[in-house]
Image (tube, rainbow, N blue to C red):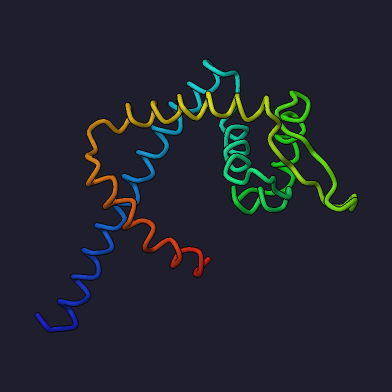
Length: 158
């Protein structure tokens, strides 16, 4: 076999291994996400997207622009608007204009929203611990670091 043929064969095998990895990541993610969605709904009466918006706001205690929330969650402004509307109606977040500019909405957790999010986040952390009980701390740190190391490659290439 020639050097070129060996290299091509190796690339194919590498490609198959990476494809298997992607499928396993996708399956694990979907399984965990499905369980988390169901538990958020049954235990807190909240959807995963609403939890995600509240989590983004929790990370930015000073609040965020709607466009920043959309970028952070990688969803459209329209998706975030509907979620924020419901959170405002429940008095879990406040919406205000930035410097009086009606074109920009600034969103911030209320005290009630902060308390509810902390309760949900604590349960969420426990669920993830339960679902990943077979993963050692060392493995969790290694996989997390590896995924983080090529995240910028994905972002740059998209």
